[in-house]
Image 1 (cartoon, rainbow, N blue to C red):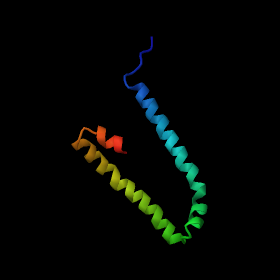
Image 2 (cartoon, helix red, strand yellow; image 1 turned 120 degrees about the vertical axis):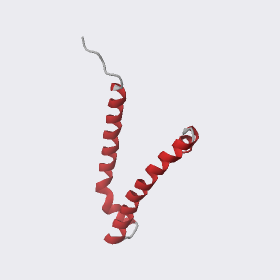
Image 3 (cartoon, helix red, strand yellow; image 1 turned 60 degrees about the vertical axis):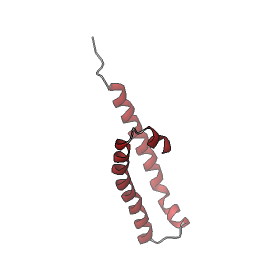
Length: 80
């Protein structure tokens, strides 16, 4: 008899959403040259723009964690 571990469905859902987010991220990569041409940026400016996207994510993730911890989180996540 096989027993199901607690949290197994949550782990499976987490793995699925990580897979889907990875597929969405990788589907954007071939479109980078088109995006660069559309904004009329050279390589240095477009690289800086991409770096700012990553830096903004690194700053906003811990900030959102602290903001949600100081409140109940419901209003904060409803806003996002």
